[in-house]
Image (cartoon, rainbow over all chains, first blue to last red; front, top):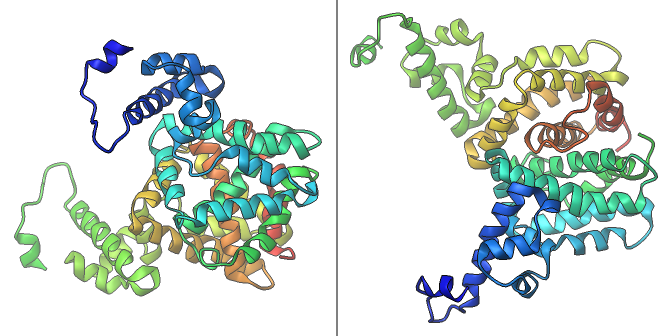
Length: 201
Length: 201
């Protein structure tokens, strides 16, 4: 490791040296997640590929989930999203889910979502990471906690509604949804999303 | 017009000379639709910009709608889509809508949809054309024919569900929806889509 690091110059001005470790881990993570998927990729292999100690993953990203999210440039921690959605009456989980996504996406006017849409439509790597993210880190855990059956189907159905809302509101910006208040969006969509979560399919 | 055409060489081999007219109309249409929107753009202005007679729009594209669709590279005539969806019991319009989109998208494995998603996430021009297409040519006419009220909201909500299904099934390819049979997809999604079309919002 010392050899590797010593073989290229590091900026030693205002930028912390650790930023190089962080960037190397992100590059290695994107490569490993793409080759092996979220479950197949190990922290050990990613760290090895980056030429750094595996403890750096926890140090910089809090673990494999955080590294994955950082690699996808998702502006929020999925564990926090899931926690917010599950905190309360399961029959109102859809409303909380929608409010959570709306507030995350609104923070930068949907820019992150637009970049993500471009990315998943352009690169198989990004599409695969999006699959892992949707099924493994957000809708999967939510559905597991509230649904009686057909977990995978429900998770994918939730994906259609939530991602579709994001595309129409932030990417295509179709009115009246593009400018609608959160309450309006929630009133219109939550009953449908709730059926995907806990209703009869 | 003769001057314009005479000022550049035309291939006169196997390619029909009219193909140049067609291509010029497509270029002019993309520019006019972007600047003025679908309603604001006129056949006359598009033809003038292309340096050809307005009758060429009917000749090559069957009218403004057909020209718009060709400019967006949508592989199917929206009038035909709308006709198929409206032909029958309004309470089953959602099922027909889903079956229509599934069969259109399936024809090239979702490739056209992936290209469209990349395009709308990359270019404001494409996003604007997509808005016109969704609200003016597909969901707008369908909702107008079956819905009691809130036409624009219903059309946009239909957009979230249909485009979201397309993104999950064909672009991100999340299972089980990516490989599900049409009947499975329709059974799961049609009730939700039907609420957007004719239900209580």
